Length: 544
Image 1 (cartoon, rainbow, N blue to C red):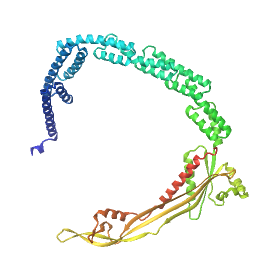
Image 2: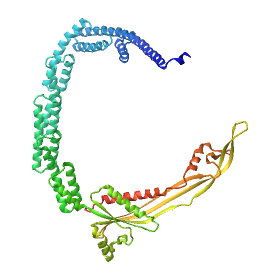
Image 3: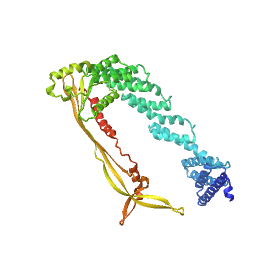
Image 4: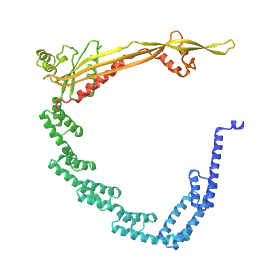
């Protein structure tokens, strides 16, 4: 009872204390086992790990102090032994690591130190070690063994960053191989790679040698190369050179204008030639590319306008109906027009035509081109529109058919609850018959579309496509009972019982609509037709 009345935060506090005590005790036990085996450093690291997570644990701090002091004493003896053997590197590295360890421990206890005798051994060996290392580093530099020299001077900096001019020598070890690689690349006329090497040094140490001037020199040489290529009308190489210079310094001399000229001039010249050849679409796209990239170049705006006027390809869209097409021809006609307009194609202009089968385009063939009726129809209906072609869409077949509904009598069990005189509910089952129905609607459509040049009557595109699809539904009905009480049946060992596992499936059939959305079938077919026709028209290039 007392526990139930205890505040929740107090219970949480008790749990926290219990867990903390458990961690502390297990740590002390494990650490004691390590110390017993003489693994004082590992024990110290175990205690440090706990204190990093949670401070002010006196028992852990005391254990850390004890194990750390034993490790210090043990390491001091190892240092003295290495000293006797003349192992200077061993002495300085051992002391360096020990000193770091003491600093870690003293973050939690301030009473640890390294004895003076060990310090003296370290200082004596360090002086001798640094002399040897420095001389070795200088030797490596003279032999251009830069990586080895870098490791040596980094090692010296670890013990004494201010030792002699070790920082200067370290700078040489790190930068000189990169500097020399830049010199090599520059000599090979690889000016941008050389610039990249020198820039690597500049970002690290801007005042190293003459690296700042080297950067300027590399950039200038690449600029001069680009200028030479431009004079030779080697536009591709000139563009690459100026682009590289511009990417490094966008404001370098006149690089922006020269880059524009190198990139635009060959495209501009080609567009002018294409316009003369009647390849207006190609010219328009090239000129548009220049303008999008550089806003303007020479008279690109004016030429682009001329190219567009020349490249425009107005098309009249006509569709022809058949009996029972139910307006499908108009749907396709409108959908194709809508999609082409939505594409915002700059060349294709759309004019809505008729769906009258009296149009001579309805049954156009090679023999009909010179037909008087054909010529008169063009003069009366198309010439004034400035259209260059007619897109005709023929509905060859269109059939949307609802098949007769199929009905089945199915045996079920109706379950009712009846309350007895005692007030208890009991279930009463009764055999019933409900109906299941199958309903199917299918669509079949076949069309032919043609693109016909108005001036010549030439059929430049023709394709027949067809599509069929269907939808089928199943549903159930029962007019004499509450359908929620009806279960399907199953037979087990000759005994008919209600099928609990398929109850939900039957209920779904009772709730399913008895209507098929015929329009969705029409839309599927229409979507396929319009997509194929529009893609073909937009890809068609009369200039090819």
